[in-house]
Amino acid sequence: MRGTIQVDNREQDILAEMRVLANQAFSRAAGAPLVEGNHVRLLKDASENYPAWLNAIGGAKHHIHIENYIIREDDTGHLFADALIAKAKEGVRVRLIYDWMGGFGKTSQRFWDRLYLGGVEVRCYNPPRLDSPLGWLSRDHRKMLAIDGKIGFITGLCIGQMWEGIPEKGIEPWRDTGVEVRGIAVADVEQAFAQVWALMGEPIPEHEIVKREALCRAGDMSMRVVASMPTTAGMFRLDQLIVALARKRLWLTDAYYAGTSAYVQALRAASKDGVDVRLLVPNGTDIPILRLLARAGYRPLLEAGVRIFEWNGTMLHAKTAIADEGWARVGSTNLNVASWFGNCELDAVVEDESFVQEMEEMYLQDLTNATEIVLDAKLKVCAPGEPHLTHKAMKRGGGSVGRAAAGTIRVSNVIGAAFTDRRVLEPFEARLMTVVGTCLLVLASLFAYFPRGLAYPVLIIFVWFGVALLYRSYKLHLKGKQTKASDTSRKL
Image (cartoon, rainbow, N blue to C red):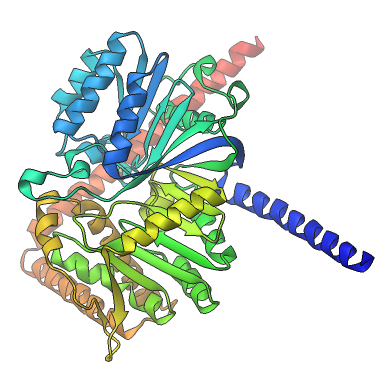
């Protein structure tokens, strides 16, 4: 009997030590500590998210911080603009960040001017600049809202009518997921906003930034707020680690999936090791070539036993993950290079069994409106009984920019592998290589017949890049001289 008790105690000690090591690994990989004392509420679609956001905005007393990739100039966008302006007129400090590319063609300057004149402090992330030709590659893709240090929202939803649907035009709402956070971790949400706000001008005064020690517990849930910045790759490291540690299940939902070779191999290895790996992605697209590009990445996963499902609705825009019984992620990060390495992203990682169970139930419900992709008798990727109504809906609903970016990443992966010969290419990738090879030959022919017409744009780009580099070098040189002069004056 004593021997059994000693063995049980040793097992408990080992499990406790493993939990400590896992927590340490997650914290280091994500760059985000595990924060206890929270309550996290799962919010599905705009029908649950938007009312919760507007209700929280209406109750604001001190400040509102809102950061969103897209705020459309439509009925939904005006509804939120009116709510923010109303609070600003009451004396609430309202700060708003939007992304230049996210708003391009969707929101006019008149919309932002109205907010600014209404008392809202508005900042635009990364607009085009002559001294930064490739600056557009980095985007603020976050979707968050934080109010008074009491409540925060981390989500995949932008602000626009397509998330609510347009019944009179037969367009269904977009499928998306977010969370409402109360408790200690709200401080991390606020600090994530402050980090991006400081990139574009005067930072938020230190005494106005909410600290964890100033907040009270709101529940027993533990979570991490993963605030990714360009080139930091915190979410990528965490995603890789979760795939490696998953024992039973790994259920993924992604709007613009284009996994890197390393991530694909990790998913394949997990599936071959007996993990139930599932990937739910959109079906609808308004650009036919994107369908080919998207499905080009399915086969290696299907061959390893990964189950892939395509959503049958208008658009699946959620970015979520579930691993085993106690880990789940909801936020803005897509499973592609742009999100992992190039963008500002924000995700909530919740370690709580009851929350994960709720996520699992929602995932299984989503699968009832999805078509499973399989390999047929000839080992071709196909979708049995695939519906075609989604394409018509997508043409009216939009949403192709992210799909195009994901497709471009996949093309670059294949072509890069063909040129460097650093991985074995599969037969299914032959069609994609044929299309790209043909396009390159056509482009070469155009250069042969119209050398000057095509050379001038290239010349302009080279001049632009050269001048931009010299200008940035000059500014850095001036900054160095100013810093040296400032240090000298302090010594005196």
